[in-house]
Length: 420
Ligand code: PMP
Image 1 (spheres, rainbow, N blue to C red):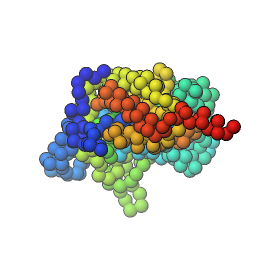
Image 2 (image 1 turned 90 degrees about the horizontal axis):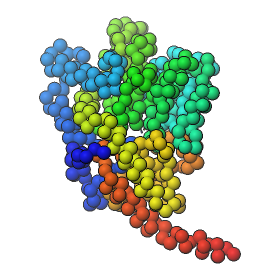
Image 3 (image 1 turned 90 degrees about the vertical axis):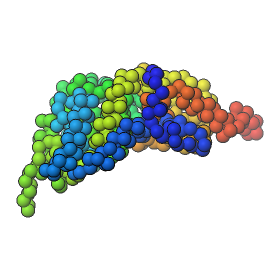
């Protein structure tokens, strides 16, 4: 466990009161809170160094450019990319995944080619492929999830074949917390001659990530889920692939020469960064990574797994609860339903106690159908949560449910008797 009180690093915990109560934030899978160092880095950039990048010959622009490029190098070292030029800045993981679907998929997928996804994908790794398959005639296949909420690699094996061109899977499920064996999945994809992409939106923030060890061709992440600002994300890609791919968006920054009817492009990663980028966002992301590195990603992972395990045990006593979490490969994400109480009502019940959780389909409607639910409640823990937050969650849930469905146990007997 992280022993230090990291809540102190995040100003919002000292400021925001929800219904007069201190904030218990259990929605970090949606977005994380921001430490003072990140907020200060954004202020510092705008107060002292704001200028557009890669354009100006003047000193201020050169400093802004250096700061932006240092951020790229920081992201590269954080996920162990061999070179900073393999990192393309995007708005978020969604844009990174779309970039690959469009810029790689449109030129490389043809009628009957196959793309393999999985049963537990976020819409961000589904909908872009729906669009691209409509354009190209490519067919989508799925790695099935077994009853223990893990991916069944046999079904990947069964699906892989000469037509497979891409395998794209989520590293950590935002609903189940399952850590998928992406290294093995990438190896299997490569053996079949396909490329492999990993949606790292829920792994980069929560565990050490080494893209070279995983062996993926593409890896997507979002800054706002790892203590960074919103509006900045990154795509890691093997450089030789970026070199061959067409741009995703066209405009300033990404060109080499432009003529009235044609143009050629800058080298990667700039080829994929059309227009003025989110410079302050990149600077903020660098500060976020420095903060995470100070804590240590292994510590973050251990802390979250311990909290997840603790929460699973603690919540198991709640009357009517069903928890959707794998036995051995879960993280700090706990999705659950409570019999007779709609997930949105659970969220409202908890909000009354100052506890923020998420309820809904979590942008994973196909997974919800597999689980045979419309929605779940989801508590997601991060480095600033501790066991007292879990206790507060369990107590508020028990109290709220008791008020919401009074004398539940007596009710069915009553109904049965009345029916007779
Ligand atoms: N993939 C996963 C697994 C996610 O959890 C999310 C965010 N919930 C995304 C992709 C998309 O992230 P963003 O909205 O930051 O683009």
